[in-house]
Length: 154
Image 1 (cartoon, helix red, strand yellow):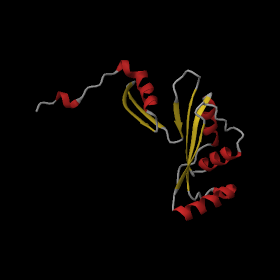
Image 2 (spheres, rainbow, N blue to C red):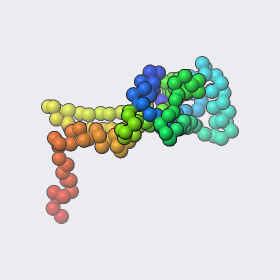
Image 3 (cartoon, rainbow, N blue to C red):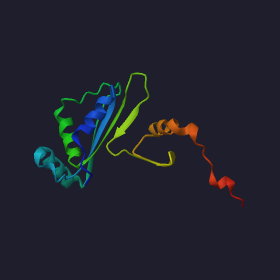
Image 4 (cartoon, one colour):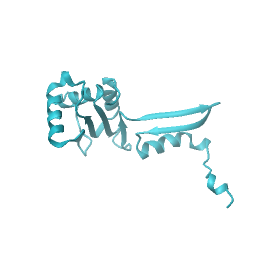
């Protein structure tokens, strides 16, 4: 079971990107919260029985960045399913036509520990390599990396 997520999280992240290339939903079967989504619940239970799969991933994709999910009954049902703790979502797109592609996920977490105004620890989970590079670049000029092994004597 996944944690319960606010419904608006998906749509607020979706609307920050002007060009959507890909949206995927990973659904956990069966979802005990699925009573209001009975058709999907029934289909996933049958799929689980037939295949023994405990997760199903649905991907919507448009390589031109013209994916339109708002108003889609399927998308609304999948967002509700995930919101109720039945999986996770991932959105890949761009804020502008010329900007780099970014990936946003319901599984993303960021932990930055500051001690006396200085970064002591950074933990990023669920971010793409490009996103991590951009986050690190914000603070890179203030910090240097030292390899502890190079300072050791053999």
